[in-house]
Amino acid sequence: MDAIKTGSLIAQVRREKELTQKDLAERLHVSVQAVSKWERGLSCPDIGLLEPLAEALDLTVTELLSGQLGEEPGEEAVRDSLHFGENQLRPKIRRWKRLFLCAAALLLALALGLGYRWVRDNTQLIPQRETVLTPIELEEEQNALVDLLSSQDGWDFLRMYRVVLADDMDRVVFKAEVWSRDEKMNRELVRSWDMGALYARRHGQPDPRRQLLTFRLTFLEDGEAQFKLRLGGNGTQGCRSLLSELPRPVKGMGWGESVGEPVTVDREEGAVLLKLDLALEPEEGQREAAYSYEFVFKMYWE
Image (cartoon, rainbow, N blue to C red; front, side, top):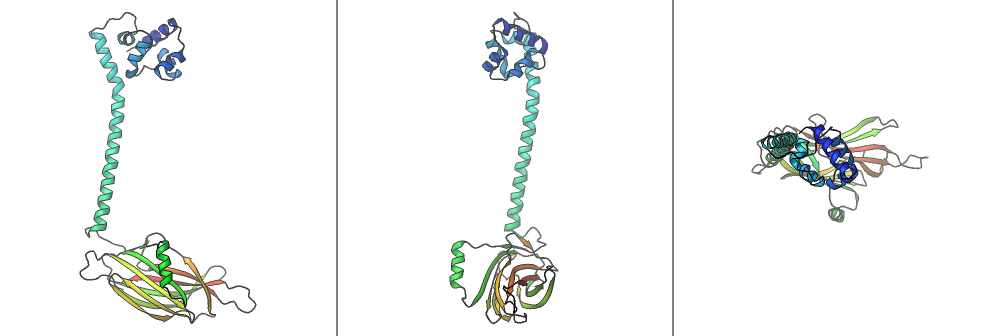
């Protein structure tokens, strides 16, 4: 197809039929700009438009392809038609091929990702180098049940985590710390306590990497704290005097940190399981208690 000859023929016949470019564009459901480009020889009609364009102008497809009125179908016209169709379809085929390859690559990546996740979560074939904690957030009904069963003699805190243990992690150690803070938020360790250690794995478990960690701390009015820890099938409990060394009694507690995302247990620094702001009884002359201390409950690995 000669774009200039075909465009001139389209413009000539359109004028003879007293059609505007807009009229022709509306019949073919294309833009006026597209018709204008055809007539100026800047582009060719799409192969799918040749037949409706020929009907709209009372021409044959052969006449459109040759750009001449009265052109009879012949071997050369057929060859030109095939060549024109091939030239128009080749870019579309390449584009669809690229889209197909991209879609296939995305599906393969998705399948590999899901497969890796299944192997990671259901087998022990992939090495686990870090210990990861994922907090379990209780629903409203569960929280109501916990409140019902909790002690009413102090401040009670319950936390639950799903734990994925590193391959070389045999024991976990729990520590409690109290830190002081000044007005510039500088922190200083007041005291720390060992809260016990638990073996990380239990013989005979189908997947010893994955454990459920639960702990509960109840702070009583005399500064003592009752605690109960459980990791998988192992547990410990007891009572510690955690807040007795503070300069003044604790008046209130508030959440200092509530982690909602998975946390990696650092080999040196451990991982914070619970952080509370402590409000002490105000000194003489003070109107309100200031949150100048914080309580931190941490987990380390051995």
